[in-house]
Length: 227
View 1 (cartoon, rainbow, N blue to C red):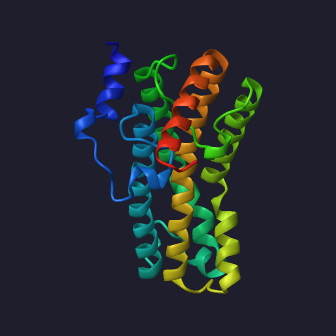
View 2: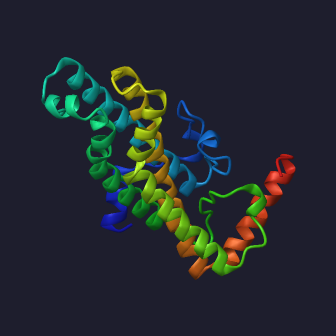
């Protein structure tokens, strides 16, 4: 085992199959194709949970700072002047930890998983699992990476429209709820980026292996009568 692999194993621990447990959000709720027994799926699920945990703590700090007028993290003058200040700056607070965690989890998945033989996360509708060419799956993976980046860096556009729709710009509690919705989008975007990057590489290097995985997934869905 290389030094980098050993370091990543310590930073992002992946337990044995019998020790893996659902977080308070079950893995199949994060995405119906995710399975605890698949290492790459589990890592994307763990990334989602880590970002959600960190982000919830950051939201609590921001809301407490704003409510108590501490001016430590939140500039009170800017908040009074701009009712969308918190939704706008929240992604900036999250950008660095999300980028670092996404890179670490991707490297952990990439080093710990042999793409030729192991399952990669497929975040697409069940009806689209079969019939796609190499070029189509490449475009899907590229599109998934783009969507993931948008979820990480641009969720405030959704948040501001959401707050404006209900005309609750002056409600700190509603703003906090909206920040949590932003956070879910950011966490999902990071997991989507890692999954799409793995699919992208497997499509280029081992497309027959990807097709075999897709056929297996279709068989599982049929056995569960969900396709």
